[in-house]
Length: 186
Image 1 (cartoon, helix red, strand yellow):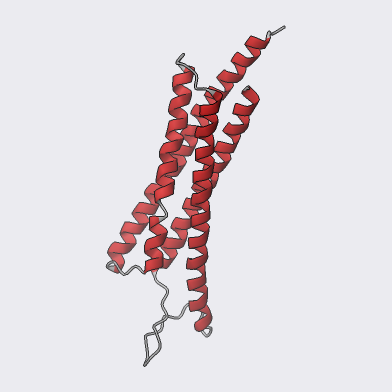
Image 2 (cartoon, rainbow, N blue to C red):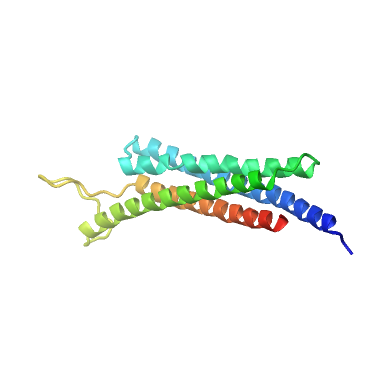
């Protein structure tokens, strides 16, 4: 029969392994999404000649949080590897703070992405509703009316936001799982 020390040692090893596994998954998924977003954004800006609107630019600025959480997931894996390799285990309090920083940062990033997504989707919806005859008609400015356009950067902004939102929600899920594993190890 296992003693309580053996039980806690197994739980700590499982938590260290989860930190490595989930930290690595979060890091690589977010890194791949960020690279895709960067390639799409640079390509579209090159093709359109830099004709991005302020909403499009703001959607790319939201990427600051996923960049942080990408490297925060790397930190999860680093702490887990050090712990697995016989290093001094972090205190449960510091581990909890680290995990909750990941949860809240990812949640804020997801919220910012959702707000930007609503703005981009609203702009596309208003453009489509203003030109109901053909759906996605692009009309030039006439007289005092503004031009109604749907450009590639609009679609790229929405794709970027969706990828960012997906990555942030993955970090929220990973961080919450780690928080519960940490609580179980106590």
